[in-house]
Length: 226
Image 1 (cartoon, rainbow, N blue to C red):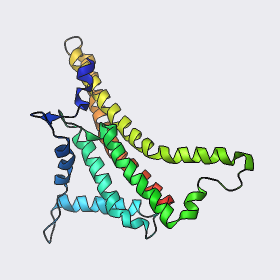
Image 2: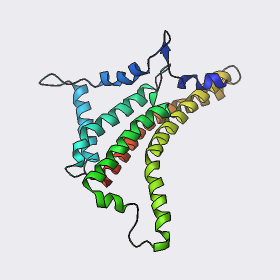
Image 3: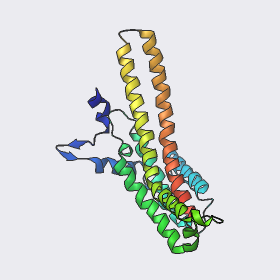
Image 4: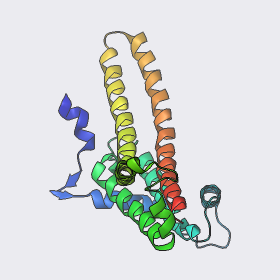
C-alpha cells in the first residue's frame, strides 16, 4: 500500500537511465516562439496572459528590479506548466521533489541577496538590526534576523513541495477509495467520485496558485534588495 501510494513520486527511468531531465525540459515545448506576423489565438492568449502577469508582478519594482522580468516570467511559466502536466494520469511532477525546488529557490534567493549587498549595502545590512532596538537585545536580534534570512529559500521550497505533494496524495487516496466502494455501495462511490472531480479542479487551481506564490515571493525578496 505504501509503495503504491508513493510510487508516483519516484524519479522515472527508461532502460535504467533517468529521464527527469527530459521531463523538466518538456514544458518549454508548450511555449513556442511566435514566428508569424499574425499569431493564432493560442499564442495571442498566451502572450496576453504573460503581459498581464508581468505587468502586475513588476509594478512594485524600480528599473534595476525590472531587469529580472525574463527570469521571473520564465520561472512562473515553468512551475505552472510543470504542475499542470503532473496532474495528467501516469505522469511525474518534478516539483514534488524537494531537491529540485531547493535547486530553484537557493540560486534565486542568493541572487536577490547578492544584488542587495551590491547596490544597497547599508539598507540590506540594516535589516539585521531594526531601528530603536535596545542595546541588550542587539546580539539576539541579529542572530534571529540572520536565521530568518537563511530560512527563506527553505520556506520557498518546502511550501511548493508540500502543497503539490499533498494534493497528489489526496487524489490518489480518494481515487482508490472510489474504486474500492464501487462493489460495496454505488451511491457512496458516486459521491466519492464527485468529491474526486471537485478535488481535481481544486488541484488545477493550486498548481497555478503555487507557481504564482513562488514567483511572487522571489519578486518580493528582489524588491527588498533593489
